Amino acid sequence: MIDFEVPRGSIALLKCGNMGLGKVLAMEMADRRVRGAVVARDLAELKSTEVGFHSKGLEVVTIAVDVTDQTAIASAVHSTEEC
Image (cartoon, rainbow, N blue to C red; front, side, top):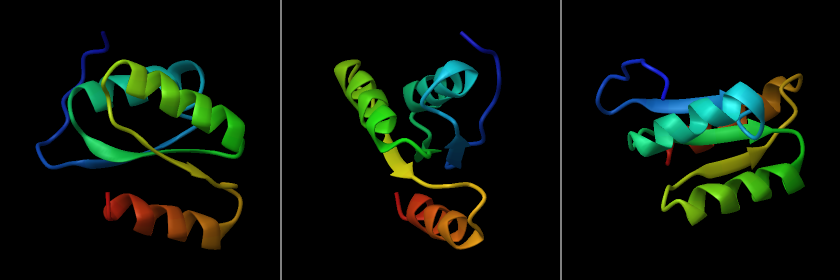
């Protein structure tokens, strides 16, 4: 378990949340019922991550996005705010 505090009502957008430390953080935040999304370029890996979350009874929104594309990032942020 990672020790960190998240203010009540927070919304998170995690880049690279489909692997490594990003995935660990995404799972911790989902476990703490923080609303938000996981973004990465690879849609197949994101779907695999989503299945992993759901198998543990956790909710997650996944968005395939290239973080070098400003328009795509703006759209992902907007989608995350609507979670």
